[in-house]
Length: 298
Image (cartoon, rainbow, N blue to C red):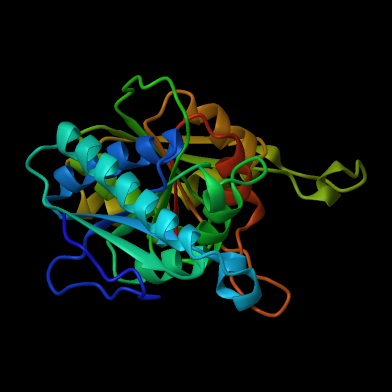
């Protein structure tokens, strides 16, 4: 394990292959994330980087200073990193592993780490700053703001289904998700289920407006085929199953997650002033999926 001066507020990536980065805090959820990250680092033949963030909060304010508390926080952080390293080595003994303890704002540090990583992996909830309502505020924030793939490892039954599911639509934001999903299916040697769920426009329910449902279905199938053709050429060894039906996208993807090892979604949400946030579909899938979820942004 490599060490880092705990007084640093950021930690730059070292030269070399972009690692798989995983957030560590000593919780059972983070432990599952470490296992997932170690497996993916092994598949990709990449180093694994364990990161624990110390966020002091009120201890940064002199009148709240508690001299023993900062040392305890740092010691607990290194303990969590050591336990995570043992978990990763038991899981994948040949993966190169490094570890860093970094002081700073938890979500900002993790987003910064994602910028220099192949992907960043988080538990769905955790201890301290990693904990939050429902999904977990940190996981939600990082998935909505970090660039590149963010994988949130949700609790599951551990069964291997040998299937990756990816949501397909006609937006440009779908392309990075497709690239990641095809690569994951190739690395795992499994089936890729490309799922497109569509809903009728509101005016389709007006009886006075004629609607050709067969043509709507055909156009949805054509869109999916056109979207997938280029990726099939790039990944000829990946078996693709197309699924196109009328349903809410969140419901369709959550249902598909029950038989998947990973669900991949893009994200096209934008805040009121242009800041990136999770879109409604990616947020819904993150909250309700029954397997790990990758949110992929360009």
